[in-house]
Image (cartoon, rainbow, N blue to C red; front, side):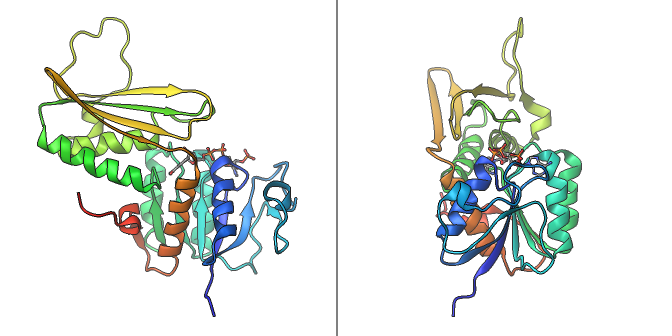
Length: 270
Ligand SMILES: NC(=O)c1ccc[n+]([C@@H]2O[C@H](COP(=O)([O-])OP(=O)(O)OC[C@H]3O[C@@H](n4cnc5c(N)ncnc54)[C@H](OP(=O)(O)O)[C@@H]3O)[C@@H](O)[C@H]2O)c1
């Protein structure tokens, strides 16, 4: 008999939350234990059919997790303001915690590490295989071409809340580490007016917003006479949802600790 992994989705009315719910409903390994929405949400206590079409069994959107409902993994795609409650719920239920929420504050990262003493935790700025490869490629190029200028460009849909994206920051962090420094030491988040010449070693970020772009990231390496650009384009949120579900299945019964998306996706070495 198949042993299903019971997954609770936090922020299930959102763009990513809905994509994760859809991925779970299509999975033969995971079961949707509960689709959580914020108290006061227009979807509270509504049947999931309202959003996802007719389903084989009755599930409602809910504002709280019934103590009798089994929860192996809590998947969170909400926002920094909802994140603390999502993490607290996972700790309280001793469930594994998978989160893709970006724009986290430093103290929230510390809370993730504290939680990892009692539950398995996996946070990723990006759950796509292509971005996992982009990160590795950017690190390799940054180390191989230490004198080349590196800049990072990202574009997302018009309603994105945080900037630069968590993925752009993760890319910047990876490049900075490859060059023996840290992002706070070398990041330039805005250039305006008389900035003067570019300083050697800085990493500049450019942010574009518009339409329904699911996520595009380019890491540019430039020197006199040539430029190398490595770009990832997400055509839909389904790739992130599939990565988050793969992470949920992978982490479900692991020991407490911090895990990384690289361990789940295991792309070939480059
Ligand atoms: N790691 C990745 O691969 C990846 C990919 C894409 C996006 N993201 C990140 O995932 C997060 C969600 O993105 P999105 O585009 O899905 O945003 P979204 O459409 O705005 O969805 C956010 C969800 O969180 C809920 N929420 C917000 N505040 C809440 C609160 N205080 N209590 C309970 N629920 C609350 C919202 O409920 P209401 O609708 O009721 O407000 C909504 O369901 C963002 O941080 C985004 O940057 C990560």
